[in-house]
Image 1 (spheres, rainbow, N blue to C red):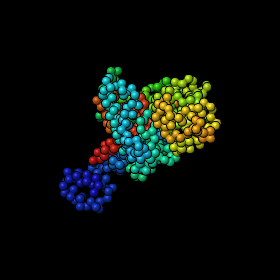
Image 2: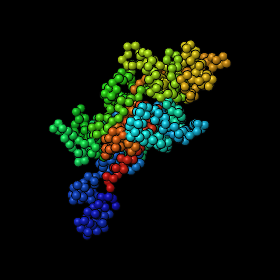
Image 3: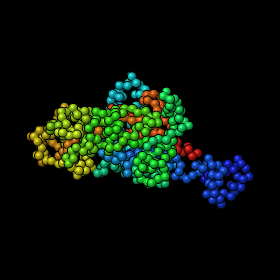
Image 4: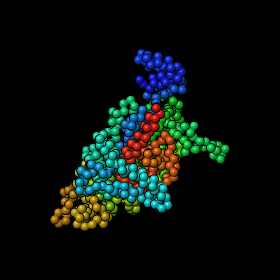
Length: 571
């Protein structure tokens, strides 16, 4: 007996007990279409509740990167009646699919297997707090409530990291290789042993599993851009704004769905300004649209005009933070933008504004950075420190360039290159790196390699205090001379805009808040967020490998929470 039949018996019992008994005995022979038509005629207000599964207001996810995909899978597993994922690009993946260094997790079974002599990793939380910098430490006394809220988010991120790794591994993602990136005190950044970068491996696996597990409950809607959030006018308190008009008290707003523009159909909705179709969907909403690093002349120019002219790893696209602010969401740390120290300068197109990331694992596996053929920094320091050190060097790298670029060499010896083989094949194929014999290097670079070899052998302390050397194995002969026939890989890199730490204030349940960080939490009902669209976790600087992690951790939380609300709507 389905829910329609149960409800009809109830209604009939209220009207006439005899009619209910007769209906119950005739139930097997009554067509379902007749039941629906009868309920629609008797109880017009119940019509929407009796419609098909597809028309029910299930979970709506905006953004098809790792955060959105994780939320979708979690919502399906939590029993959401339906999940619709709206992605503005032609394909899912976002910037997540380009992630090349890996995903953090500690302690994990893969970490223990790869580094059995390191002991338990109990410093992930400390490393994350330290990397967050002044935005966390300066609030110890002046804003203790804000600090506590940040620490709560960091605790969720780090304490659920091992479960995030297990979740992906159980889906079939290879995460058996574990490396140490800059700013980390232990190796904890996971990736696969094959040639597929971790971002692509995770995204393709999740998309396949969603299609397999979702069935007709899951719909991926590409080329759909959300234009505004729908809100419940009944719960929105309206007050005078002092100018003869009125304003919405956003603290009382309930988000009920989205309006979106589709370039993929002819639709029956209203028409947008560009002639495309406008549609609406109702249901709890999860925002997972990423940051604004590619919104060069929009949000980036608004919050960090000093970064004008910096190349970026992000595709050029508008940020969506204003859509959240329009329904009362508070934003935090919007001027906190991460500059990644190593983006490849393509010799074939050195002035390209969008650049491939030179993965942090290249340095983690032993690679070194050179300026004028000499090392100048601990390559495993935080991204912020390495970037600032490079940008303090004199002069831009390209004379007369419209972009701000520096001339830094990234060099990997045979051991480091072999350990990063999954990435090196692509970089070499693209011409971003090239192989050279040591004999082809200038005299100063050879001297640098000889000195570094002695540091790796622990014969002397590194003046830049590097302690971990990955898989570097290039040595010297008995005369202290580096092997002239050894082959190294060299490429040119420069700092690039990579990640935006700022975003919507949210809590450990992934609810978007209409309260400032540190104030009494006021969740906006029906609205969650995950991934780079949120703020408050990373402070001044994000640890490498934690962007994919936050997408999985908070995406899964948001999916489960939104699914719970969606299910209640049908009881």
